[in-house]
Image (cartoon, rainbow, N blue to C red; front, top):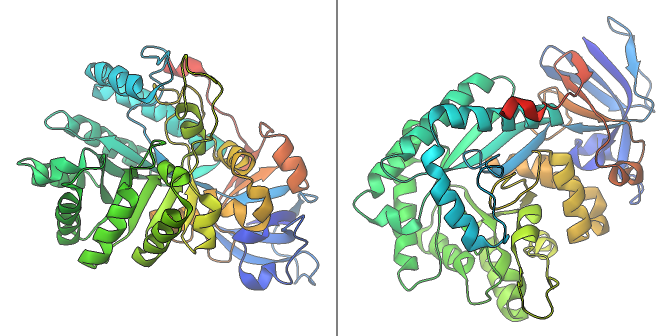
Amino acid sequence: MLRLKRARVPAAVLPPLIASPAPDAAEPSVLCDIEIVGAKIATLRRSDEVAPAAGVGEALDLDGAFVFPGFVDAHVHLDKTHTWDRAPNRSGRFLEALETLARDKENWTRADLLRRAGFALHCAWEHGTRVVRTHVDTWLPWGEVNHATMQELREAWRGRIELQTVPLTGVANYCGAEGEAIADLALKYGACALGGWSPMSSELPGQFDRLLAMARDRGVGIDLHVDENGNPKEEVLRTLAEAVLRNRFPNPVVCGHCCSLSVQETERQRSTLALVREAGIRVISLPLCNLYLQDRRGAQFPRTPQWRGLTLIHDLLDAGVPVACASDNVRDAFHAYGDYDAAEVYIQSLRLAHLDSRLAESVAVVTSAAADIVGAPGMGRVAEGAPAHLVVFPSRSFSEFLSRPGSRRRLVDGENIRDARPPDYDELR
């Protein structure tokens, strides 16, 4: 048994009965006492309640230190990660990223993928992430190595990180001769959804009809890269919402990026938001990577970027659309930086998207909302019966936590608590 006293838990990840009465909007957290037995949270109560008779063992008094549930990183690319040193993108532009990593793929052997992706999962684990969904480049025939290696990593990390996989290929490929083989290859190695990307085209509605039919037949959802650009004419998100409604698709639909939505006309934005909500689409914003890639101007005046590459996070939330934020690419040609630290993703997302204006619910983007979007029940919450994965920070208020994104942390997994120790980069060499 592990007993934690006076843990300051964000109200958004607590059960309603524990989170009420609602805390101060400026400090939406609750002091809680948490008792862990085995791998689960056994009891949870507000610290101001009368405690029952002491259980076995002494309680650890956290003295108001912040406690988050284990994080959920809902959209990453483990097959591309940590290739920056050998395949950098000096212009920072999207096209060069595509070309650079296309050349680097000849290096993606099983050993290479195990080394880079394994290091990435080690980083995520030591930063407190307990669920990771990765998109896996899937082109025949070499895509099998990618998926087989991710399956191997899934087994190696089982019990520590839940590793989900989604194939990444052109949506049009599902309509071609190899479409069935691409889908079945990914599912053979445990993919949880079908995925891909597509530019706008007149063929896109029919391509989506085909993809949705394939996903329905296989009993899975879809998770797509959508409108990762600043072109207002790119409306893949809207086209997909119409296809989901037209086909009455019953399974989960997730869309990452959705950047172009932010630069469209107001009325078009509103009507698209309504369609997205009606279709039940879930959205994942990738603020760090999109900030890095979008609006690179080169010699154009002014050279300074004029927009942040974000989708309409607030407006999606206001419309009732589930939203998460995630790491996306880490130390590769699409994004030169990152460390699979969901706390950093949350803090930077809050700053970039002004999520401080809805501070109470903001933590859900890397915890409860992210868990719901990727179908990880019980994760991302502090509740009785939930998995006992907790991340303890020394901060004693939101202001302190948000002001020191690199602060040390302790990790609770079951009845064990320890200091986090991110791996050294020497492990990559």
